[in-house]
Length: 252
Image 1: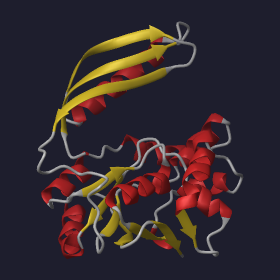
Image 2 (image 1 turned 135 degrees about the horizontal axis):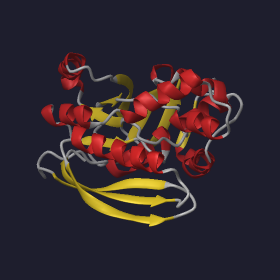
Image 3 (image 1 turned 30 degrees about the vertical axis):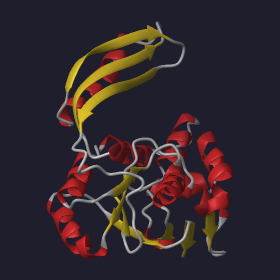
Image 4 (image 1 turned 90 degrees about the vertical axis):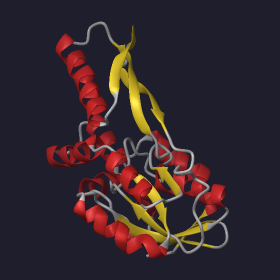
């Protein structure tokens, strides 16, 4: 992580009966975000499929001396998150026709936000440890990062940002299949305080789409990082710390 994109290619699998206006909006959205990220869209490839799928193949450049890696966290670092969680349960509620309009609008706003500003902040402050929070969830990707760095991570549940609507659907136990898979696979490496109930645990295992970054920040850089984040309008939450040991610990 920590690179800059310069070229992107569309990959689309669209049903033949999908209205052209919808296909056009999908491609337009991809083109706009590619431009926002500072890359050039150079064509791509499409096929027909029953279920619409769209993505981008992206090429970029990275300075090997300024990369963010999962192995870069050290004891004493603070853990910073750049987007809230709860996208998986909300979008699953949307698919089931149970989501409120305002909740959908909230999650779409966050999912449309690029991680480029957060990545630039990390590079500016010469951070070494980080990962994106996507399908393996906050806890799943944290387990990977803790394992790669040979450390233990402690999170404070009350400081982890969760979008408002997510609680509504989590209490109905509406989650994507990946959330249950994450819990089954990663939970042996996670210790929960007894006060953190099952719904809250599931939200921490919730599979995200277009989530934020989890950054390991040396304590001496924290204040300057937070000041610059505020200046460039980049949301950040300090949600935990890195310790000696292994695994993940959740406290209230």
